[in-house]
Length: 222
Image (tube, rainbow, N blue to C red; front, side, top):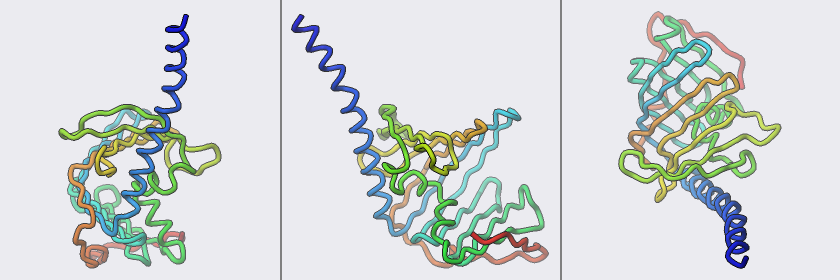
């Protein structure tokens, strides 16, 4: 009987400790990303749409400097770009919308808009207030241990995903991979192939020049 009671105690104690470990890992990741002054990330992305059965692949590089400067340069599809220059958000996707570039004025909410484009900020900005977190175990990514965390938006939160799995480097706290699923079941998987913390990023990286013959399509400011 004593052994049986001890086993029950261990089972009951394991669940909250497991949850605390996941929350502690999320706190570590949040602090690590908040401390970054600049960022240079190479990535590979897969998007699967269950409604159409299609799969789209992309890869490229994301640069960030402060809360308002963001640049995503795609090597696949080559030439696609998303640039937040501190005043405007430029969305130039010649692979799917040739001959035009969309411009949104950032205004006073510039940092919020840049954050909505920067997927990492969705996971690591006040995460405990925004998500319920569960531990999904440890898995190696490119030979390094990563802790998988399942994030579910709290009720009433306006989120771009229904749930997400984020793989965090066990030592540094930096993201190694993430997978988001939206309300329609679309799954976006992004693998970080190179993570440059506090990289030397020039301000010129965040300037967009409208190519000759490309029409600027104004969008409502945010």
